Length: 212
Length: 327
Ligand SMILES: Nc1nc2c(ncn2[C@@H]2O[C@H](COP(=O)(O)OP(=O)(O)OP(=O)(O)O)[C@@H](O)[C@H]2O)c(=O)[nH]1
Ligand SMILES: [Mg+2]
Image (cartoon, rainbow over all chains, first blue to last red; front, side, top):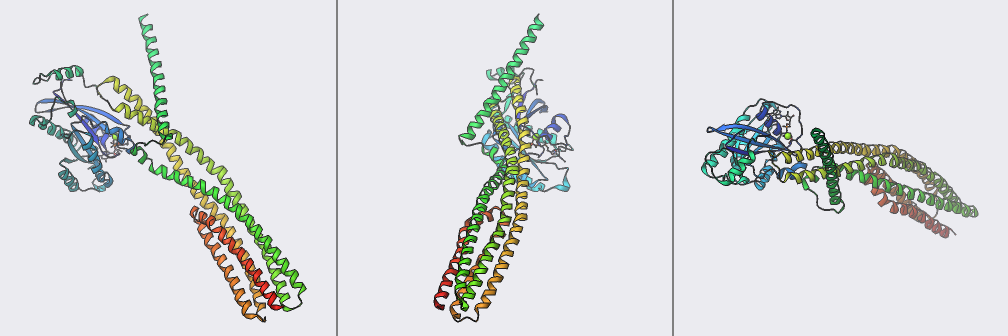
């Protein structure tokens, strides 16, 4: 399908926080109650519209288990947005955020938009991390913050779309160099405004794309 | 004809790719084996995620090692009990003989002491039975339980190498991954399948190892506490009996001429024995608490036995003094 832009997203966070479920809810509007451990990485894609433009989100759902850490580091490269997820019912997943953030900052480009997500907001009775704590952490590190539930779909759309909006704004402001693929943004095949030779060759590669 | 040609081509390609696949699996496994053998630094996160398993393996090796040590210690201990008993017996017979030559009161005492020593030397041998039993049980434990766990550990290590090899492979194909490129994704899926299967077999064996080691530790504790209880009872029984006879002799010393010398020496002797007894008791308690205590047993045994020997020497010296001062 034709798109104006393609944004590469990466979802990171401890194992079991609900990264794959968030993706599944966003792409298929389904919920998977059984924990199906991600091996390395899985992919998802969806079209969204911002400012009248079609944007393809190419989402990399990484494995949270520690043994995959070195592998998943190579997936950060060229991501425009990251969803950093913790589980509001497990304090340790919140405590590990600093490590995740360090990893993300170290292995991605500095303009990458990071959205902090406190997932499983439907499990209010088992909550271990207060919403204010998440907000404070996000403020301190300059992240956007949201609590979501992959189960009830609450805020899931918003989390993905708000991140895209933030990236889009950065493009408008000229912060992202859209012709540099390392920024995680590709220009679609029929993009009207650009006429650089680079974008045409990319366009050729992605004609009829959206395979995943 | 075209269809057949295509089929054959497809078939060959497929077979080729499976051969290549097999070769690559081997390649990454070998690479991991090399890393392990040459002691090159492994991926810290992969190592860290096996921390619980490695801690369990540490316990396993300690059980293995301390069982070996314990066997050696029991053997030496048993041999020394025999020596000690022999020496004790000879001293007893010597005293009895000398005592029978001496018609004075001292002679009577010497005879009584000699008799007590002979008795003690016989009783001491009773300790060998529970020790023998302990030796046999540990030997069986080693042959059955430890070697069974060892087999599982080996299988686990094999599977760990395969899993880590697959992770290396995955890391390699992850360097240039593009989900929109069909060819790369096909390759990635293959590697992912390999990681998944090796991981599930490794996770299973990892679990098996952890459970077996826990069981091994618990059953050894059980075994030790069971058999050492018999040992302890025998030991206390032995000391009870011998100290009773010794005390009786001490009683009969009371009216003796060289009271000062004798009482002091006898007291010193009993003091030694008491210490010895206390030490053995302490050791027993520690031994019951597992491997650490057992290491302690080995450390402490020579001085304790020396102590036992010392008390015999003490006795000889004392009897000579007594003998000379009496004549
Ligand atoms: N109640 C509730 N459960 C959730 C939610 N999100 C995920 N879960 C459950 O949490 C478990 C883990 O979810 P996954 O999405 O597989 O976890 P993950 O973060 O992808 O884990 P890894 O792939 O190992 O990194 C599953 O059993 C889900 O059903 C949520 O919003 N609410
Ligand atoms: Mg997952």
